[in-house]
Length: 117
Image 1: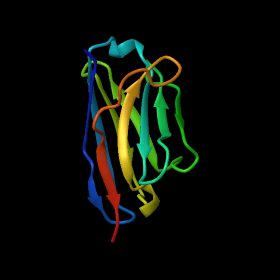
Image 2: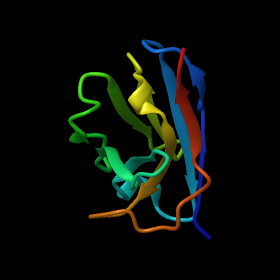
Image 3: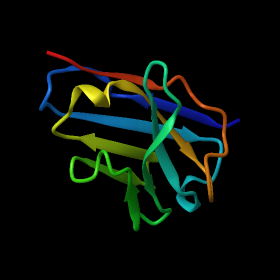
Image 4: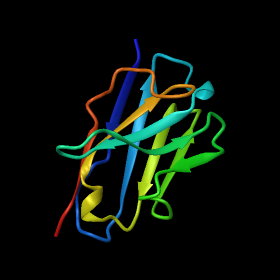
């Protein structure tokens, strides 16, 4: 049974930082690309970042390039998203997922990120 458990969200002021984590189980984590997606109220879920199975290359949405960094620890089955210089438009529920070409598993509960003063 695949499990994807996101954590680390919260309320932060504009310009602040958060570090999201996702612990995965139920599949061979070390061979799977991993993704972070987000969904803001009233909007479709969108890709934020992708990381290959070995850690490189990484890819980012234009809206987060230079501010967010995706990383992974294959020994701990964990993928992280370091988010700096946060903006109100980054407010969303953030989800992780895995798959060779696109997300392959049911979405977890996600973690809420709210950027507001």
